Length: 251
Ligand code: SER
Image (cartoon, rainbow, N blue to C red; front, top):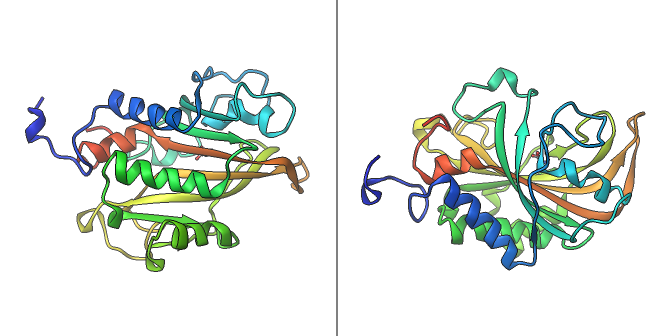
């Protein structure tokens, strides 16, 4: 391994995977979150999926108002297994098994705090250069767009609108809502700017903030959840690759 002083990083400094997970949990603990353990890869009491695919899965009964959560603000490092991306597994950024860093609000804070904290963690704690971060929102989500532009101060030309910025439900039924994905610009060597984040290989999605507001019934109809909730997810391996200045999670 190279000495720390010679290692490259896109952030303040080279960080190991364990340092990244600790920094994430401590940041959210300082903001009133309770750290919760990763749930089992085999979901408990959830017939909609075979394996756990996201940190929010153990939150489902809380988002639906069926059970009381251990805290209204929680953070976790969740073991995840995904097969929906199977055709992309083996490229530079997709795994079947990975760890997801996530912070959650059950009817407590909503879009403004969540997006501001994401930005603060990426730019101030990790030191990723703000000018290489590109937030995106769902075209219908004027609040999230306004928060990025007016509260956080991201220039309008760097805020994208993507119609697939909607997350969930995982199976045929469950919580879902508009999301806001944050992309990192890997630079011209990773591809053309093209249509921008979400469309070009030059941009890597690193964090997704989901605003869980709806319940989808098996017939596809959506109704508002009892409360507005937040579910975020950031792949530990992708983020660590950024912080180690390498372009592939396998590096
Ligand atoms: N549930 C969202 C995702 O998996 C955010 O955690 O991307």
